[in-house]
Length: 434
Image (cartoon, rainbow, N blue to C red; front, side):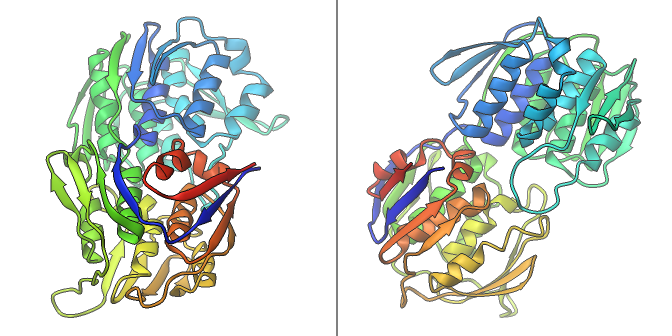
């Protein structure tokens, strides 16, 4: 197990380029299972979760070739025996992104074996939306108690109308991938409409699918009998871009974030602006000047600022951890409301150990009273419980006085590509200790 050793207090300066989007990568890589023809995807990030998914596809028989950060996938000879094996079940259970294989395998092969996938330890992340959608399309579940797994199968998926119980991103993606080859027309209402869902739909349409309503929460899918190959390029990762804004606000001396795809960032830049952070748009770049002082906005009636996560185009929950760290050095107070996951705010105990003034009201709400840079956070030892808490701890450590150690950084590696090398190029003092 590896750790990061960080010497805080060094200003970051320069330019950084965001990686390809992790969440989009997981979706579109699984979508390659829908065709026997080659699909080439570029701008794929070199991160643990994506690499593990690609390896799992190799093991089920997908031919994978690589040229720099572009991969070509061809699923023309899937290993049906391995897909039904305990080894496949075990490996799928270790990777949260493996759940996105269910829809394509169900559409293409008519059945698959599933178990509860792994991933972040951030509280309950139910899969009901996925399975209710599959059932509406005509799939049936059969428990195999001796193996502690379920078989999901359908001789023929049939299009229908469905109202999703929540606007789940992975649930929407999975149902879309199952529905594109269903017989008849599928209408999905309350669909997630994040940019990465839009990207998935556009890629599928280039493969021959017939999806309309892209960008809205009402999707109509006319089923087709087969799909063809295509090429696709991932968007930059909006969560990484938000993380870099947070780093630049806390310990930057002027940082430029290149090629961010401004139109696909939604509320992210404005969320930081609500904390008083200056975020300047320059073409398709963002520039964050040095922030010696930033003041939290208040609402028009003068009440305390509240920042909460919400489905797109609201604020992604993946950035609340970073925003909390940034708020510790603002002037003013902020209430953060994490609505979607009940365990994601527990990492603030480590920030309190570092000297932050935070009141954890309950598993979903925390009040941060900013120091206005009158008191610097102090270094400490901590462990990363999940990807987003890990990057928030890293930002806190880079801004802190003294040396910090973050263990369990494999969690950070799941979502951030060669992060220590890229931050050292900006002036951070960070090293990986095996």
